[in-house]
Image (cartoon, rainbow, N blue to C red):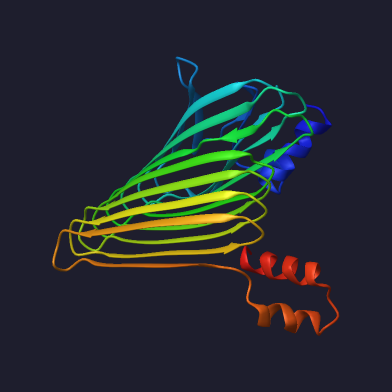
Length: 305
């Protein structure tokens, strides 16, 4: 591990990876450090394609870190990580990928994470993507998240992509059973000619299942974003999908909502708002002594907080 590696880990995790109860560090397609404990077991897949993470039932307040760093230009890294969370367990899982690309070939990470939560299990999942490097090679991230929630299970998923990623396609596929809850919060900032696409597919299959999806994004300069959501209510259930975006310069944002109720007791709501920063907000901050640029940065920081 060198200074670049440690810096990438800090950007992705905002904390010391080695203080977690269990962790695995993957660099350039290979696991380089790993720790398990009696309640959380991280097991490499036999075919080398990823990890199986087993959380025993009734495990409380465990912390798991699964970061990926890429420093090799031209590398395409594909990993499959499966999270098996036992009945009544309550854990925090922090993942994400940082790419440093200082050369001319594209570097890419496709992380496929599959979550299986047993009855009344609870997971707070945090994922951050980050890119840096002055080379012409792109930093590309294509995460796939598949979630299965058993009866009364709960998963909160917070994803952040704020800096340096040239292209990303995020796909999230979720199946919720009776009484289960899924909360998703997404934050994206793109600039230059960067592109970010998000596709959420949520199937509410059990009575009393619920989901709340919130996407907040800012598209600057000539960047492009696309948000697609498809929520299907198969039973008596509740869903609220909210997409708010700010566009600046020549940025563009497309929102494609779809809600499909297949039960008379399904209640599905979608809200979307796209526009520039309000002039009144800018004037108020500028009257306090901020420049126009400083006022814009303050508003965007608060919007994405």
